Structure formats: structure tokens, C-alpha cells
Image 1 (spheres, rainbow, N blue to C red):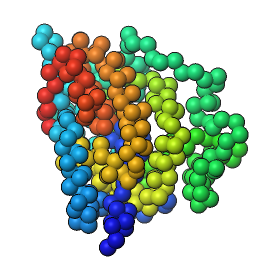
Image 2 (cartoon, rainbow, N blue to C red):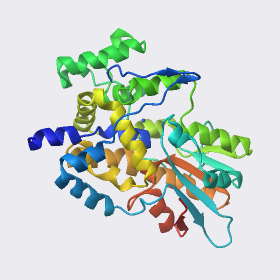
Image 3 (cartoon, rainbow, N blue to C red):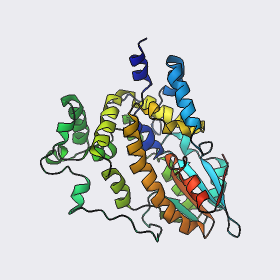
Length: 346
């Protein structure tokens, strides 16, 4: 098999995997009693191992170089304070991730504060955010005057985006002026139709399950970022990065179940370092690094600043997308740099 074809088969969409572990064409799924069945696909890492052993070895080497990837639940300790916990979540409804482990449930039961990425009440911070110079909130979502969404994509690509926007009721006069990041993340190109159907049927994704468990234990629910802070990270993505990620997702839209399956298995196997290799996602290193800088690292720093004020009180359970935990500027290391002992639980 030609190497280009092997690489094509090994590619994955960055924003799908990162979005499910941080936010297509019609996909077949079976309706079961109680609602739509989970999306089941093939593990693309296993395919890479079989079809392109060299790329697989490079992937493993890169993954092993990333620190703090061996667990999704961590215990946070400092002398004189009650212990807290940090959990990496998956933003999916699949029962393989929504069924919380006994260790997670126990940590939640011991916690008085549950800190999520987003909540109605936001935790305070002493750090002032960088000013965002815009004349109107519409600038966050819409292209500058004179630019059209369709100019960045082929006719076929734009037709697929327009189809999804039409299905969701986006007014026709707005469809061609939205920024690529907004269309991709909010309109749902990065989720297979079976996952969308499960959410519409009322099946809760992992973060909501964690939230309900915290509420059951009467924990105070706080957010670690505002809606504007979350939106700003995406708005600041360079246009070239927005377009590259969206094009890649559109190219892989018919394999979205395989992409989701792979992300879940990476999470289950505690091989989170794989998510930080651009080889896994089929995009250039420049595009990948740009995404990590704006959507992961910048948000890590902001969430850390809010979380540290809470950790001083102890008995805190922090639950954020799993991509925010590993790496030199992941939350595990950032909490250690702030003087905490952070130990892997599971």
C-alpha cells in the first residue's frame, strides 16, 4: 500500500479528539430502548500500528515524552490543608466514560467545592485578563466586512457546512459570514450524528454526570472560566489555523465514529500523551502548536489562577477536559509549580 494512502488512513481530526477530551455527514446508528445507542467505531491507533509501524513508533516516542499522562484522576495535597482532586473528563455521552469509578465518586463525596470549566457562578481570580479589543461582541463570531466563509473552502466543503447550519436553523443571511471556528465548534461538524442524537435524547455527557454527582453531595458548583474567556481562546486562533482544522474535520467527516472511538480508548488506556502528537491528528506541526497555544495552554493558565484560590480552602474537586492535565503547562504541573503535591490516583 502506498505510504500516502497509509498516512491518509491513519489521520485523525484534531478538533474531534481534542474537543471531546477539551468541543459530519450522516452517520448510521441504531436506536435502542431508552435512546440512541453509543457511537461505536474502529481504533485508528491500532490501524496505524498495523499499517504504518514507523509512524506508530514515532507516535509512541512523542507520547512518552509528555509528562503527567498516566492518570486522569489526581490527588492534590499541601501541608495544613484538606486534600483536593483533579479529574480529566471526556465531553461525551458514552457509558464507557460517564460511568464514574468508585475512586472518583469517593473523591466527589469528600469535596465541598466542585470546579468545572463552566458554571453559572464563576470562581474569583486576582489576575486580570488581557483586554480584548473589539467594538462589538459580533466580532467574536463573524468575519470582517468583505470576507465570506465560502472563500476559504471548496464548494463541496462549504456545501456540507451550509447543510449543517441549515439543519440547525442558522439564518441564511448569517451562514456565509460566520468565522470557521464558530461553525466548526458550535454547529457540530466535529461530532458524529449518533452523538448529537444521544444529546438530543437527553443522555448526559461526562461533565454533566460529574456535576450531578457533586450536586447530590451538596458541593458548591463553580466555573473556572467565563463564557467570554472560552470564546476568546477560539477567536484568537489565527485564520489559517481555523481553516486548516475545519478542512481536516470535513475531510474525515465520514470517519467520525472511528475518531470518537479512538479518543475514548486513549482515555481508557491512560495514554493521554498520544493526544499531543500532530502525527496522530493529520495536521501540520504549525497548525497543531497554534491550537495547543490558544485553546489549551492559555486556558490552562486562566483556569489555574481561579483554581488556586479554591485549593487554599481544600476539599475541592476540579473537573476539566483531559487535554488540560498533561504537559509542562498542564494543570498537574501548574499546581505542582504552585507548591502542591499532585499524585496520580487512577
